Amino acid sequence: MGDKYRRVVSLRGALGGIASILGQLTVVLVLAAINTIQKYYILYIIAFMASLFSCILLSIISNIPKIPKTIVKAEEEVEIKASTIFLMITSFMVSTTLLSIAWTPYIMRDLGAPDYIAASIGFIQAISAVISNVFWIRRKPETYRIAILLLSATPFLIYITKNPLLHLGYAAIYGFTLVATNLYASLAYAGLFKKLGAFKAGVMLSSSYFLALFLSGFMGYFLSYNIILVFMVSSVFAIVGLSIGLVAIPELAVVKPIYTRLYSRILYNVSLTGYSTIVYGLTGTAKVVVKTTGLILALLILYIIYRMLYYIVLFSGGLS
Image 1: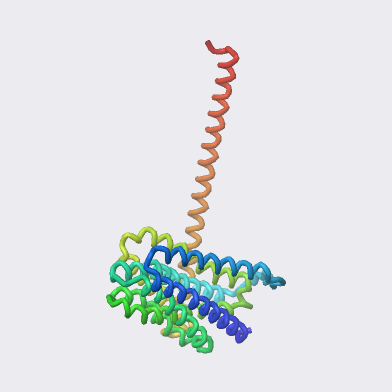
Image 2: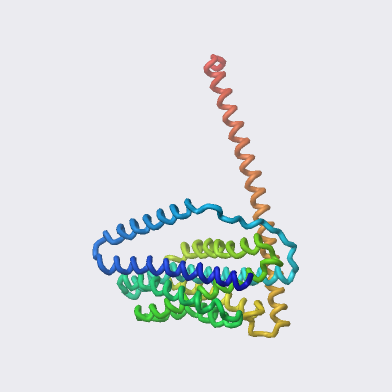
């Protein structure tokens, strides 16, 4: 299953990268060729037509196989490793999403780069992603350590570099290492498929991306007034992800295995305690909210009944 899964992931990533290349190339050409505001309307129309075409293709596909829901009682070591990978990939995804929020405004507003340069960053990332899928798919897990090292340094390098053209090189590094990090997470969960269960492994991998989008969107909204803070928070999350990978994940760790198991267990226990505390707090808060809402509704109903009785008595002539 391992080699087959690697081929599927690699092919999917390569095809997705090719689609991104076509999209980014279209954006760059339209932005460079047209100087009026109409260029943005044209891009929106092209995006709408592409989305509509993809929906039509999905609607005509038949006999899509369903993955059976399997629940497996996993060993504690498997749970620890899965949770550690979840924390690492979530940290990196928060970092990269915040970076995506700040990067384009930074080079256009602060560095004065034209819009087609900003669009070229996405184009180069797409090309790099295609190459990355082919390059990393046959590498040993230990080599992914290089990818997370480079990825964690990207936010800081982008901020201190004032030449917009150099950002094109960072875009290539960013796309190359981001694909590798995501690929490692996919392969790691695939390796835990039988011990963790297909349903749980899939949920943990996909939920890490959704959690990262929620956290980065929330923080990006409140930090958008100061782009420096966005880069700082992005760098912090990148360092957190790098630290988790280098000390708590066996394939990536630079410390002895005995310390890796110790750090991963500590991280697991801390995260489990934090999760339990949050759930308990949210449960208590939810109960208070429900009780308060019920009390308010009861008082409102009593008030409505009182007013109805008042008007009934008034209209019947009971009050002078």
